[in-house]
Length: 348
Image 1: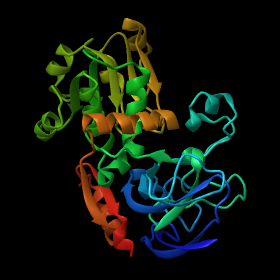
Image 2 (image 1 turned 90 degrees about the vertical axis):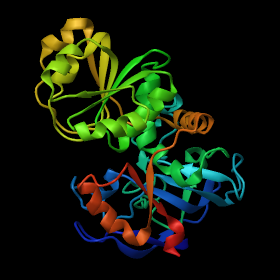
Image 3 (image 1 turned 180 degrees about the horizontal axis):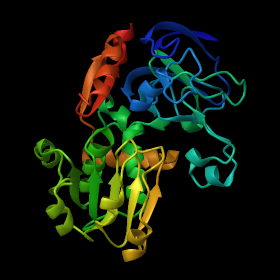
């Protein structure tokens, strides 16, 4: 076991404070990583506050981890000391069910092991995340960071990025695709950047006229105000794919009316019950509504390569670990454009 300094919560609604945890000794297929940067996700705040009632304390959040390999187990073949690597939302799965064999590890039929607040598949110990000096992860769940990708901003690609990249790939978005993005936060701004880089015609749907300039600066071709009934009516049947990034219960019916023939609305934000959906809106134009989680390891590695090739990175504000509680408070006010990233050198 190795001693590790981190920041974590010891009880619900408590501030994150410095803690000491033990990282496991290297197994044969493990990679030890010195953490350089860790993105801050809304999920981190929800778990630290026990908003979903499932947090095991102490809780050390962080699943957007970027750093360098510091040691490898005897059976590791993909990585060597000094390599630039990353770890996303998962650190293990069964690796033998149909989903895992199909590269869809997040849908493992035997359950995944989250990077934090999960249980190690060997020992049963609670996993702790990336608000820490270092971490030990099974080789198969370590990703390579391309040399052309700026490590400082790569972290949010491992959660916000892959969350929107997965449906963009599943629904084969490419040159000329008509894509709408509902909401312009951490997920939405990545959806805009990635869809534009894929060649799509991209519209941002928002209730705020003040976000129009931001949307266009990110590459959006059009902005549609969802509270403008005339504009919404004029946009009916106009999109092949709508990525809905709103993180809470809301009415999706107005967005369904915007889908053209065989169009799909994909929920990537709301993980809770929706308001009632009008079946006639689905029947008309053969529309669909779907959900999407994160992508598998192969798809996430492909995302990192794509972003390196096309120069796509999230818009980030760099913070010290000592500022994490203030960052959580600002996130509740949507006071960030668009993701926080912790410079872990501040942990000391």
